[in-house]
Length: 165
Image (cartoon, rainbow, N blue to C red):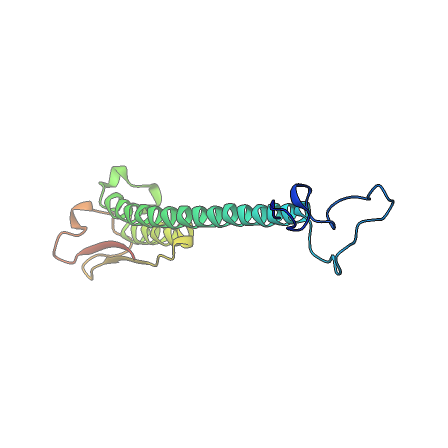
């Protein structure tokens, strides 16, 4: 729009932009008014911004959930290893501190192998594997009374291991 004299309508705009004149002639329209108005553009921009904001929130939630799962799994894997060590510690306690089922060598082996294997069920979601090794040597019979001094004493009389990997 030009404000100079003779530059397309002066201060009041071009003849196409002005309303009907005093003489009753309607303003001339430009051909092909197929463009979007300002309000339509604002609505489109607002919709796109809303979708972008929603996408950002969804991505943040997915990333947050994934990081929590990863942190939770590694903590549970550590807990499984500690539980395996506790099974071995418990298996070496004196006969008076053993469960009734574990007071013979055969019962001791069955009880602690079972307890070790249960760790794989309890912590299976972490992807661990469990290898129980509760062995009694040839010098011991399964019906003999349990003796904790012979467990992991270095002579291979009785071996207690609950390997969690």
